[in-house]
Image (cartoon, rainbow, N blue to C red; front, side):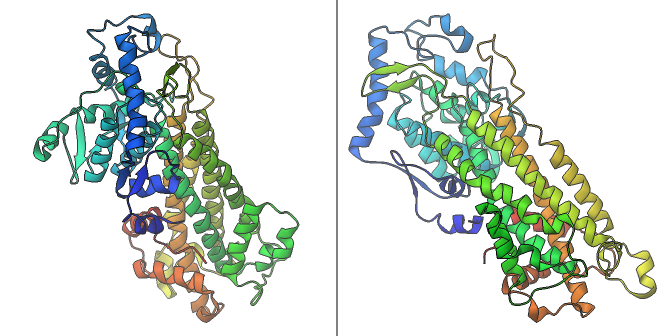
Length: 520
């Protein structure tokens, strides 16, 4: 499913409260879809029971972590009843120490959707009013400015989520109408009254996995699209190299029945129109980066189902501490803020995606080199005559592809194994899930850059084959012809050297928006 599909579904508000959310719905909210909180009276009462139960414990002078005690290692510090209402404010403020780049508005909206969905399960002791305020911010597109660094992924995403808590109470900054502004100024402009957080609400907002889960939803969406796109690029590379389409035969792949791998082979086979027009190479076997492409991309395709299950289970869980059972009147202290499942998925996903960057990098190396590209000019330059000597085609682009791939591969070191004991050894084993998710987003960005370069290069390569009368435009499948047409609308055949940065950036943007048609 592409981003275009998500956007087209955004006219219908996405409902939160006692129903499961899909990662596609999180992506849709990230891209601007409206949200609607369950308004049924019985649901509102269900939510309010948790908040009232917290109030009753305060009336009875009960001991509740993070409500009548300090946080983390400070849980042995008793907070007087005259101060408990200030405690959430202090929690949000002392965590205001995030650094690094800020999350994009799309990423921050995904964070808000994930946190709203977790709290809407009704096991966090928050009020219905708090849920309504997050709903309002999303629908008005008032987005917290959230620095991406500062979370070890347990006790949840405390520092980045403090920026959401701070915005709810009217502090720090937001992105509104495309500008970074003080939250207080935006609230004053729109006549919004800042919330006063109730006991437990600061902890409920911050002590969870919403940031890593939000990034995981977005990463999954982009990776799923990349699997299709890299299959199309492989078909275009095979055409450019006069490859042997028999490598993707259905009888061949029936002998090794990984379903995702076979799906990739089928997509490439359909793009090449293998059964009607098998293309035979001078070689019996193409090099691995063509012949084994389904086996490489297929690892990602086969991993997506378990990754979806991990992400969506986390998305639809109450993942803060303590869990508040308002109906049964239990306070349950545990570690649901631990982001191990998301960490594992993100570490795995970045590995599978980086392998696709490496695959396309190798395909690019083949089509550039006259020793391997079966009669095409060096660097796919379309210059002719004595102009050929001074034109260099895609030479520097291929160096860029090599650099982006190397960086992607470097970032595949699993973050989850680098747990650090912190916070006076209270958080002595942490998930590193948010760092893994950020790594994965970086690997995706680099791989999308590699894919963008390959789309341009393979388009050039196919046009060169056509100009050499080694390939007929009419023989191309509709799917490949469509991609060729779409790329050619932005990219003029590279004859004389020119800077390609602008068209590369434009192509990356279109990949990230899912605008290249890759479905059959």
